[in-house]
Image 1 (cartoon, rainbow, N blue to C red):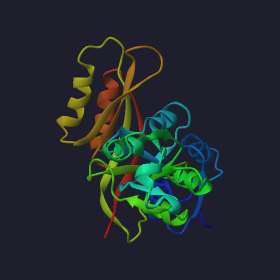
Image 2 (tube, helix red, strand yellow):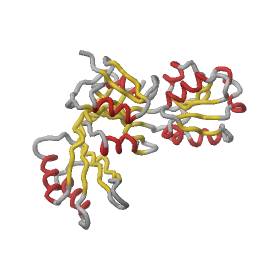
Image 3 (cartoon, rainbow, N blue to C red):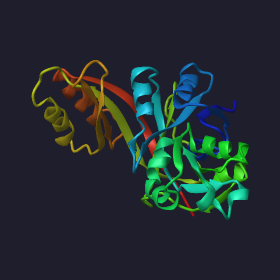
Image 4 (cartoon, rainbow, N blue to C red):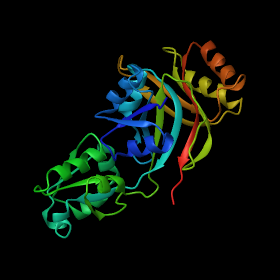
Length: 289
């Protein structure tokens, strides 16, 4: 049976590219928001949700992290790191006059932040407005041909919505990547397509420290250190119970084996911490030409 996958739409978003890359043979279904996509997977309306988790320029996608931690817990079953090139696109009638006529620029907040310098230098008087996704911005421009607006989105969106790219690779930093995760009630699998390069295996943990325990974080990190478990990321997130109350998201560069990671978890729990495994999964990098 063909699996159904959800992504932040509409068609042509970076989430759509990630979805097609990880699961090219599946049915891909767009959703208007990241929470809607995650809800659909949790409630088994779709099999897997592919959502953005982190960008090299703008950091974590907080709405994704907070929603899966506080509301809809799903297993992380795959990761894809996707190179991100942002482009400025307009309706064809503004192809030659965009610098003088464009008054509004639409895109997702992360995309806007990634292209701050370009917009400031080339469209200093334009009003920058946020929208749910880069593809939604491109669709908006397509649907309003008589309004002097531009979108920041990917090349695929320009093709889908018939727009002209007037600024290529406009992100402020060229080493721009976004990390996507596949979330599901299913267990992780190791299927992969020829467009991906396997980069390793990762286990993601959520650790809640005991209250008023000085040195607790140091002790937690020591449990990984003496086992020579490399941590690729550690991030604090608010528990939303009061000022100063945080838990930690820790990415361990190791599979959830029978010895090392379980041993570290038991040692951390012995300190009075709470530990949840958010997933143990294979990581991939999209191959670009």
